[in-house]
Image (cartoon, rainbow, N blue to C red; front, side, top):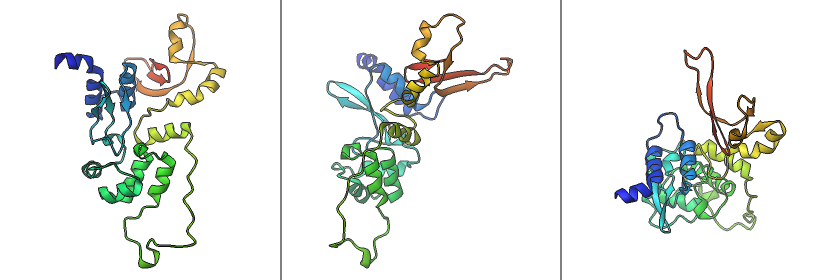
Length: 240
């Protein structure tokens, strides 16, 4: 056990931290970033693979960390457990998930918004489109599904752009495994003279620099004479 733990310590420790949220200074995005920097494979929450808690998942001869459904903001544990309990076979599509798991249409939409249906092989935008068509109440007889010569064929929607995917990830699971938000602004920031966290070691002592990133920590101690201490994160690392 000790040799296994030593080998998989970053994955096991990160998994425990994610399942203990909210806690301390570090948000899930920073815990996941640290795991990936230690060569841990992190997989997104998925209706066909995730449990409520984040867990280790076999990946070849190694292990990956599968984010749990708890990572999806606004998803109640009871609803997530319904998804897991009804998973005797993989869900085929959004309608199958809604029917078999017995979840409400808003819950199905939340799972689609979080891109938790990738294993169904549909894009987030398409999944959300199909989820919005779900209804919890049965149709009236006049509107029940049946043959209708005027019904149009289903037209696939264009895939959501990568930058929009990242924004949606942060809105729903508070992190993204696809890219860092600052990466999409880097060309503009470079033209404006902003440097990356990775460029700091090459900077001169007392050199004035400009940086931009996500604010992880902001502290203004009473003994610091008005100085504010900020920790910024960009696509290359963290800067204090």
